[in-house]
Amino acid sequence: MSYEIISNTGSRSFPDGDTFLDNAQAGADVAIYLGGASGEDASRKAVLIELDLECLGEHTGENKGDEGSNCVGFARYRNGNDDPSQLIELVRQPKTNEEAIATAVEVLENAGFDVVVCSDQKGRIIDRLVRPKYNAALRFLDEGLATADDMDLTCRLGLGYPVGPVERVIRGDLARHHDISVNLFYETGAAGYAPARRAVVAKRRSAE
Amino acid sequence: MTKNIQTVAVCGAGGTMGAGIAIVAARAGYTTIAYDMQEDALQHSYEQTEAFFNKSVERGKMSELERDAALANLSSTTSLEGLAKADLIIEAIFESLDVKRDLFGKLDKICPDHTIFASNTSTLSITEIASGLGRQDKVVGIHFCLPAQLMKLIEMSPGENTSEETFQKAWAWAEEAGQTPVKTQDKPGFILNALLVPFNNDVIRAIEAGVAEPADIDKAIKSGLGYRMGPCELLDLIGLDTQIRLCEAFYPITLDPRASAPPLLRRMVAAGKLGRKSGCGFYDYHQDAMFGG
Image (cartoon, rainbow over all chains, first blue to last red; front, side, top):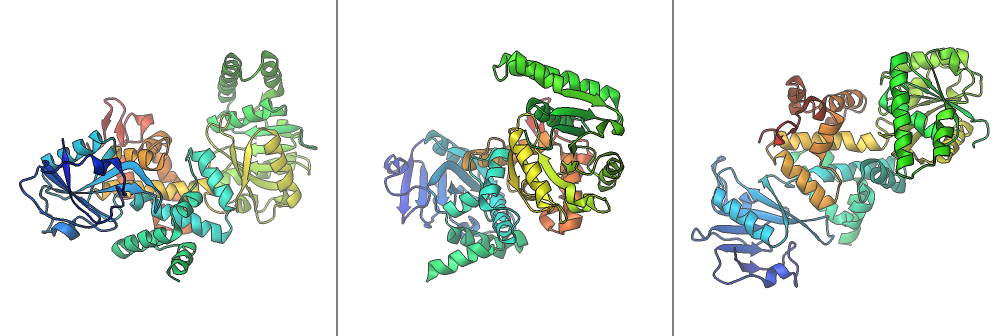
């Protein structure tokens, strides 16, 4: 299954030089919009729209839960500003065309990615789940529960994590963690997404 | 060997955690007394311990001589009076403040003044366990991970009244027993469960909110973060009823909404979907099919 890159205004999923960009073919059955651009094309088997912090519905519009077309959202998971992982989160709407989803899965798996499907909710899967944990770890650090190294060591030895939560969130950039958390907090109102003090400090310093 | 700690007693040694802790102590060369109220449970644990050491010899992780020495270090008793000579007592009994206090209260009258009482609690306050005891300065938290005989990590917590000397002795014992201790404050869940229990609840709430199927969540977490096991697989392994118990231990203390048991978790437990132990949880272990799939 081939794909065409319709618009690329700077992608977080596929930075310049990524082989995925090199293998695109004009006129293919699948259209891909990168870097915040979007469009509709009913003649394609699937239209893939890259997402950052936003929902797919912001590109397609929504209709009382009946929204859905051949447009599929996606994001290649990055731990903040870390390099992209091999995971791609595909985003569907309630009435998204099943063939479009299957086509998107096929295109991305053929390119060597691990693909999961989720609904059009803020944070998709991973950020929705890990950002509260990172905020908790940062708060624990402030409250003196344990040192950052001991928290990370505990998670590595006790849970088999390759990297502890403090090391990971700092590596991904605390200012970016702040932005993701604020975005989720605005949508959900859940206290776990309120950015931890250290993330707020990092964000303010990055803006100076 | 740590000065003054030569004899270690493990209460609840008829259980999985207690038996594992006894292995750690005996393997490290300490005279180890396994205590449980049930004789048959102690016998079962001893047989499993023997099998574990035999396997260790087969795999070249210990010599036959070391195995024999470790087994010789082990004895068992169903009498609390049998723990009178212990320098360190580690309890791994039922996770109840009253039950643990009652045990330590009885031991307080039996053991000499220098004996350190350690609790393997994963959720309760060390200070509250020690409260009312005559030796609050000699009570410390030593939380092992399952399976204790294989996992190196120990979370060690001093209570409000634990003396520095007690904590350092217990710390030194943990290191000499081949473990890797980390120090945490005496707060609910210490580090591990304080991070894990709410995270697992968030996963369950995401499933309930229709964000993704369990298999997709597990795949995302393993691929995107490199975790060895997905959270749904882990929940099925530890048991969904256990997750509820952890929530019920944390939430009343912390009032953290993330620590409260999600409705889906309660429904699954009510439906008998406890995880691997019941053959069905987020995954069906009879047909290898996915819950809700």
